[in-house]
Length: 450
Image 1 (cartoon, rainbow, N blue to C red):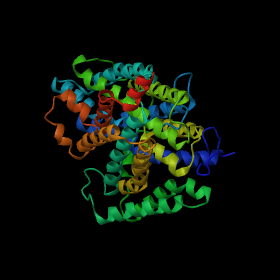
Image 2: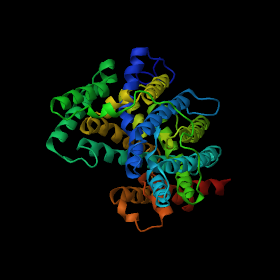
Image 3: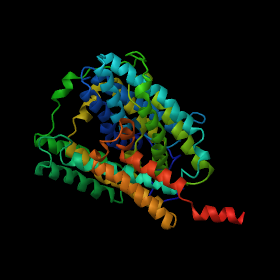
Image 4: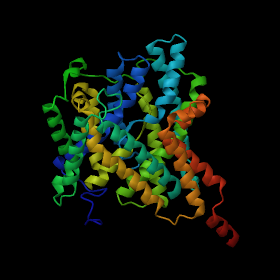
């Protein structure tokens, strides 16, 4: 019996195959671009175009394997939720700095990749270590810090959604009326279907919206499959295909981001738990957080072995749970299987890669905003006193300030700039420091009365 009427399938429910595939496709459409984009950015910036098709295949393959680990759980590894894993954006700037440093020394493409994957492999053990004592630092993992992190994740993703809706970053026709109308059409269609009382209409809202939007885009000449002829039919995963190198000088920025990624992952899993109607306090909650961060670290190590960049849990897929009402972790197995299939057969993923950005933006804008709303709910779950108000204001000011004016940190040393260039890490780091430095009156009173 359902404990909440908004949920079509709860955590341990087992939807039938048709329902599972339908729900899995919605998650896939929400995360696909996010999984491959960091690789596209790094590959283009460092001149690795010849390696990009293989790197993208491996990012999809590892994303599938990692998602399975999170949903299935193996002993203490995994959170047991639909925690879709994908290539992390947080590492892009640090990895670009590392790549350019190797390139400046005359390094080949193979040397660049072998060194980047080497430092990513070693760095993953930092997150693995952090996971083992995350439940001991309850002053850090609180509704206050996780609420700030989740809200910042949502707001950061809103920028991605509206950028796609307008045509995509660097688009020649960015903000064109045709892009805006197509994106808004998809957005309105998904909203209309999502408020339906019919479970199947609601379940398929995102998929139908993107399919109809893509058909309309094709009719308008905005959709082309011409680039698919360049994609290989099959990609074989080869451990350390480019070799293994390590450079201590460029390791530190990556190591620090691994540490902060643990906080971001705890925020994503908290939001996921909230949407699944699971408690976000207590022993079971911290067990989920610990298992999720441990899996995050192990999955990132596995990603380096199989020639792709660090993984993290994707916040946008939490919003799919909220919109569809499907929290069954068994759907995660289908998501994982499809991602592995796309990784092994790149030509299939090429179809999804061709979806016009305005269609993606129209489908993801509300989903991303839903994450921010979840963060606000967590912040509002406890009374906001003067101390919390100060921490929230300062954290959002720092994090969203960097998001709006990224050049503000350009004059800082490279290591610090790499850390503060992410709105999520800046807001999260600020929240942690202030939470530790500013005394909590409730804790002080508890100590006085003890």
